[in-house]
Length: 369
Image (tube, rainbow, N blue to C red):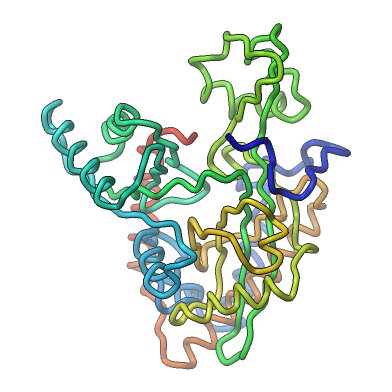
């Protein structure tokens, strides 16, 4: 069993646990970003230029994209770096027997892949960690199937059982010989430690950070809230490496090394027509990542990705906005240059269809771990 924050840079808990804007609603935080994006649309004369930032990704990876399609592309060109997976569409299941039959189909695919429980399940279409679960056995897999929307696709991925996780943001303008890493987010998973006296509920509420975000954790652990963890027992409160689901983000951009730059540039240039996006990786030791080795890519996000280091609680509001302005400048310029090369943005109708489908499916997914 891994230890809390094992292999990660030292976890800094000094200062405030949350920034004052860290959990603002989207309508409060993003208006300046939207206004700046509108300016960029006018400057580059293109509303949907982000959809050609990565011509090999569906819609550039901007909205409504298939995780399976993007991971399949990454697996084809950089198989040694990517966690193996398969995608499967959940049919309409009319009764218990049909559910069991589909379960057997998924189990057969798991066996053919050589996976062992636990495995990770995640929706093919979605963002911000929605619907991501660690499934420990057949019963949990069946429960996931039964709660997943019909005619929607989900991924089953090999579980990379390592504590270290980071989001590594890469950018390269078309025509440039080399790209650069513009952001690294270190993802720390929240824990509470048992004292043999207090219940899990009491431990969560007493924690400096978790107590302020109890709405994220209490419902997720409802089955064991009134149990008393043993002295020294570490209880992980979130599995998905998503800030909105309770993971703790720290800005690691200052830890980028030339070896990291070279490694991710080499990976990125092996992906055809990939210029802009974020790799989510897992690793045993971040020092190895800094040397450009010993990590596994669990997800590749395209033009719709965010430089998530901004959710470090020490980042100021204006610094967060400025960093996102930089990201969007690069995004639109990348799309603009690719349009000059002959690639065409998707239509507004296609964009709207993808947006609506993602918006419709998201509330239907199983709860996130």
